[in-house]
Image (cartoon, helix red, strand yellow):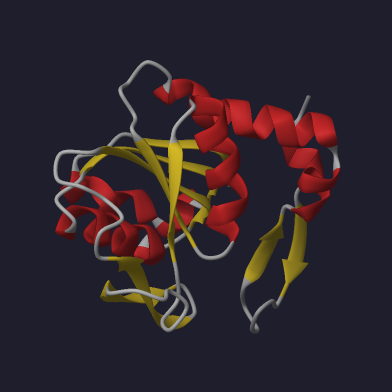
Length: 172
């Protein structure tokens, strides 16, 4: 099955010059969705993953499914003001702007082996912020899994400082 046939290009979204990779057709097809989750989870089976961490909002889609596939829990990283208890936050740059992510202060524990998950790796800003929040929690970044990597933006390069294996299913 060629998963790329389920990815649509949407030019000039969310702003001119951005070629958005729309994976919603992949989500609508049970076989391609199941395969995507397995291809993202499989490299991390038997690696001692204790928690999956996913960034709002599309990281939730794959993160929860991968957590279930690995029989571990899931921790959401959210945009500001969405979490009800004490949080720690990190500001970061996007491919097309800037934002902030937050995590509950007690969500991860020192030494906990975490797999960070998102739908897309572009410039690496969102994933670097997720890595930084994980690191600030004292947890270990055991791996990073994304469905789509835009290799020409070299986001993987900025994640090298975290020393984690970066696994992408589809590369453009």
